Length: 363
Image (tube, rainbow, N blue to C red; front, side, top):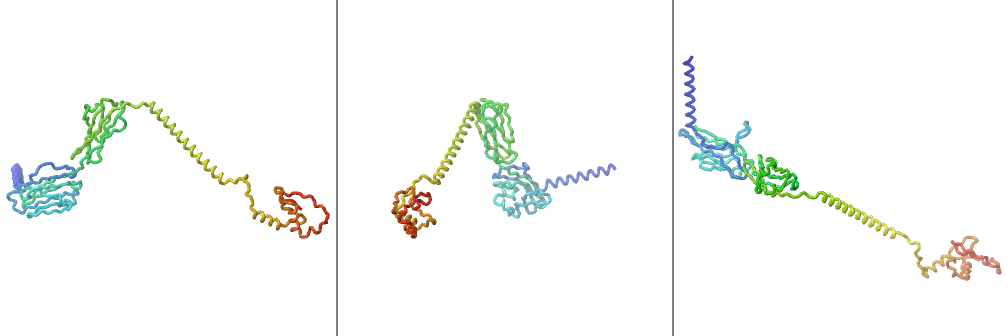
C-alpha cells in the first residue's frame, strides 16, 4: 500500500515539472502594470502588450486586439490585428485613433488610442499567437469626464453672528466627484465649521470678523481637478426697527399712489359721461329761427286751404301775432265762406271774437 502511494506521488511531481517547463518555454506576454486604466476624455492612452516568444515557436506571428464582451454568451469584438506583416482595422470609429506603438514583429504589440471617448470604455484583450505558443493579457480602460471649473457662492447673508453657507458645484464631472474647501488667507478653516465633500457645502456658524478671508474650493475626481475662489466678508446686521419703519412707509406710499390712481380713473369716467350727456341733450330754451318770406307765404297758403269745422269760422291770427288787420280776416272769411256772408243781414253786427289756443280767432 505504501509503495502504491509513493508511486502516485512521483507521477504527480513529474507531471507538474513537465507542465512548468512547458509554460516557461512557450510564448509569454511580459507586460506588467495596472489591470485598470483611468483616463480623462480627450486624452491619449497606451495599453501595453510586450511578449517574448519561445525558440520552439516557429509558426507565423498573429496578434489580435479585441473588446471583451461583458456577456459571456456573446463573442468578443475584434478591433485590430497583425498577421503576415499586415495591419487591419475592424472598427471604423477607432480606425483613425488606434495604432500600434512599435513594431509588432519585434516583440511589442502595445497599442495607443488618441482622443479617447466615453464610448471607448471597455476591457481590451491582447492575444499573441505563434505556433505552437499563445498568450494573452486583459486591461480595462475607463474613460471619465474631468470636473469643470466649479462655481463658488454664498447662500444667505454674511452677517455677524449668523450662519454662513459657502457652496461649490461643478456642472460636469464623472463620479465619484468630491469637493474640498480650504482657506487661502486668514488662517485655517474655523474649527466650528463643517464641510460636506459630496455636496460641496462649507457651513460656518456664529460668523465673525475672524472668519473673513479668501476660501478655495477644489472639485476633483480620478482624472482631474479644478477650483474656484470666494472672498468672505462679515457685515453688521441691519437695524430691524429701521427696516420695519421703511417697509411701513413704503406700503403707505404705495397705497396712496393706488388711491390717487383710482381717483383719477373715476374723474376721467365722470368727465366722459358728462360730455356724452351734454352732446345728447336737447336745449328747450333755444329761440326758434326766424321764418323767411317764402315760408310766411307758404304758411298763408296753407291757412287759405284749411277747411274749418262746419258752423265755425276761425281766423289764422293768434295771440302772439296781433298784427293781423280786420281787412285780412275779412279776406280770409270771404275766400273760405263759400257764399255764407251773402246770407248774413247787411246791417248785422258781427259777434265778439274769442281766441282759441289751437285754431286762433273765430270770425
